[in-house]
Image (cartoon, rainbow, N blue to C red; front, side):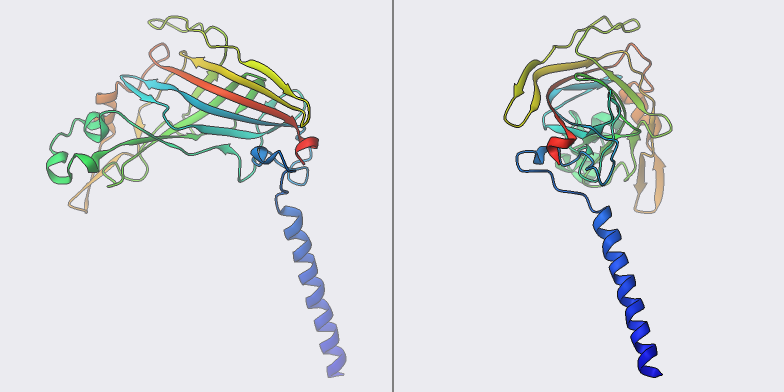
Length: 275
């Protein structure tokens, strides 16, 4: 009797292990075919069967200006994922979305807060400030070279002067960029600016559409005030820096007083080719 019960128990355990193995393999992202590894952020058919087109956009330069502060885009960042037929929401897996890249902010923490005495305690090298653009919602791909991007900007410092959660924009109140290669129609005092239509090439061997040397622009978006910026004095006393950041940066900043220019190279391929 014991041997029969043991046999049934072993069979049950084995069945459960097989089931878990099958679930794990089904949920695991598939690796793109050779020559398409740049599209790893695009969901495979196992992850999202509705995705038919894979997209990768590399932002290689430009600038981002909100209120009175301008941050140059010195380090490339990437937006990648896939869309259903006819474009629309961008779907992405753990390898996709918007890459988190720190861009150096001119003026550092002192320029952002006006607290010049910080240099005496920490030294100027410890007050370097970085801005990291993060997604604050689902991007919309409106065409081969047009997109709507809801973002928030994370302000970071190696010594933690601003705290760990100092942001401009949030999921509830994102900065919404309507990126175009055409000409903008901003509210005053901004004037219309124009992007650059990319050069189009088609790589026949891998069937990849390349859009190179394009420029996205938008100067019609609004920027909210800072949130979560906290200086902890003596390691125990929290002091909100939101109002100082807003004062020094001209935030919140209404539409017509902000601008982004983003140089880009795009690659587009069918999900069938990628996977």
